[in-house]
Amino acid sequence: MKHAAHSALGALAALFAVSPLPAFAAWEPVRPVEFIVPAGTGGGADQMARTIQGIVTKHSLMKQPMVVINKSGGAGGEGFLDVKGSANNPHKIIITLSNLFTTPLATGIPFNWKDLTPVAMLALDEFVLWVNADKPYKTAKEYIEAVKAAPASSMKMGGTGSKQEDQIITVAVEKTTGSKFTYIPYKGGGEVAVQLVGNHIDSTVNNPIEAVAQWRGGKLRPLCVFDAQPMNYDEQVADGKSWKDIPTCKSQGLDMEYLMLRGVFMTPKATKDQIEYYVDLFKKVRATPEWQDFMKSGAFNTTFMAGPDYAKWVEGEEKRHETLMKDAGFLAPAGN
View: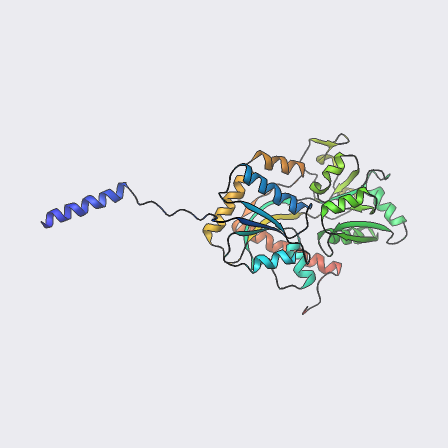
C-alpha cells in the first residue's frame, strides 16, 4: 500500500514536471489609461502624446484605450501634481518636457521629478531659432546683429510659458551676444508659430515639430539649431533644404546648446511589472513606421533610455537646469 502511495506521488510529481502550472499573467491595464500632457495643445509634448495615442490605437498595442488629457495650468504644475497625487494608480502616465525641472524651480510648488516613477526617454527634442520668411535675415549672425542694432528690448522673442525652456534659451542668447529681447509668453508652441507667421513677434526658438508646417508653407525660416552638431535628417523639407542643412548656433557665434527631454513617467509606487509593461509598450511604439515618420518630420534626436540610465540622466539634467535657472534669475525665492 505504501509502495502504491509512493508510486502515485511519483506520477503526480512527474506530471507537474512535464506540465507546469500556468504562470500568472504580467500586469496590463484594466481600464483606460490617462496620458497627461503638462502643456497646452499644439506644442511638442502634445503632438508627441497624440501621435503615440494614434499609433497605440491603430496597431492595437493596448487592450484598453489611451486618453490624452492636457493639464497646462501653473506652467504644467497642474499635471505634475495630479500624477504625484495619484500614487498606486498605474492607469495614469505623463509625458515630460523641461518644465519637469523648470516649473518647481521657478514656482516653488511641492514637486520634484523624484516624486514620480521614471519609465523611459522616448527622444530628445531640438530647438531652432526661427524668423518670419518675409524678413531679410538669412543667418543667425544677421539676425543677432539686427537685434543688437535695434533699440533695446524692441525685438520680441515669443515662446511657450514663462521661466521655462524657451525663455531660458532666450536669456542665454542675450548673455552670449549682448543683445536684449522682450520675451512674450504663449500657451503652446503651436500658438507661438502662428504669432511669428503673423509678425506679432520677431523670432522664436520653437521645436522643429512646432514650426515645420509653416516652414514647408514658406512662412517661416530656420536660422540655426541649438545642438552641438547638425540634425541627422537629409531629406528635403522646404526651399530645397533639409534639417541637416540648418547650421548649429555654435557655428553662428551663439556658443550654447540645449536639447529637451521627451520622456514618460508614472505615478508614485509603480511596481516593476507595471513599469516593464509601459517600457515594452513604448518599444513597440518606436518600432512602427508611423513613429519613424514622426521622428523624421520633427527632426528628433532618437536616443532611448530606461531603467537606472534614464534616472541618472534625468538627475543630471535637473542639476543643469538649476544652474541655468539661477544664471537667468528665475529661481523661486527660498521658502516660497
